[in-house]
Amino acid sequence: MSWFEDFELSKITSISLSNEWFDYELANKGAKENEYDFRYPDFIVVDTNAKIVLLKTELFQEVEKQKKKGNVLVESITKPIVSISARPNSSMLGIACQNGQVYQWNFLTKDAILQSLRNFSQDPPCCIQYSPDGKYLVVAGVQGNIYVYNVEKRSWQQTILLIAHKKKGIKANYITFSENSVSFAIMDDVCCVSLYKLGHRFNDVSNPIEWVFSGKLRAHCSNVTGICFGESLKDGGEKRHRLFSVGEDMYMFEYNVERSDYENLVVSSYDQIEQECIPTACLWYPVNYLNEDVIMVATSDYKIKLLNVKVRDSKICKQTLLGPSYGGPINKLIYLNIHNKTEDDVPKYVAYSTKEKIIGIIKLPLDGNPNKTMG
Image 1 (cartoon, helix red, strand yellow):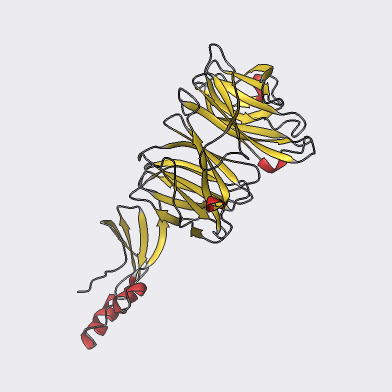
Image 2 (cartoon, rainbow, N blue to C red; image 1 turned 90 degrees about the vertical axis):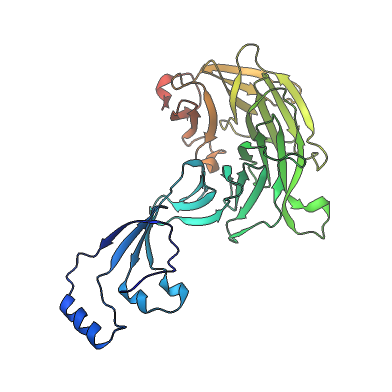
């Protein structure tokens, strides 16, 4: 009799022996000559965590614990996926699961083993997002903590960021990054918008450069339904980054990213953009980029509005178009091929989702043609 241990599996549910030919007579003869000589066909075990491991009989002779683990063939996801994010300029996909596991998976090679980044068992993630340059992965937990992973250094930032400094259990609904990957914003389930920047803590140059909290505000009196960053040109030709939010109160707020600090998230302007319908999502319109400042806003009546935000104090409706009319109103908009925004001669697409489990693509520029949408 022999036993195998220390291979770090949970409860084993199935065992399968190798179907290759095995000389049992030779094995019995060797066992009589040496009682410690154990020979048996290699076998595969499966545990309740969907891990399939190959165990060879030579492992019985191993003494060191690290050499007894066996060869992992397949490692699957056992709990529902709560959020995904594709890393730009890469074939890696970030996956967050309900049990707290955060994985990276190559969707081109389709590896059978997922790369585990971290297990947040005490603070399961509710949403994740990669930065546009692919250097950072932001993970928001259900307890209101924000974790930042440096993809290039393969390390987590030691300082844990917070959505709320006095109250726990505030969940992030969505994370969005600025184009230059030095700022990201979060909308949460208590009608607030939070801003975070890459810089020195407390503006003290003696502190290392890391992600720091840079302001929070409850500007909307109802749920925030969408946030997005935009990129405009100043009078001198310098780029400036702008942050917008829309909510069920039918208002659009613009925040001053440059002036916001640890004390407050500064509001630049606010306007009521609807009278009857509820804005459900927003995105900086990537057509005629840097020449015309336009935000596309999806509404509850299946319309998409293009708002000119060139002037901060006024939001002018440039055009109202019919959007996808199946699966409920749009609740999220994401721009595809993000690095082609400035090139107007290449095809541009926007991906969208609805609450009724519909995922689709819209071809730009918007013109109301239903044949340019699919889902």
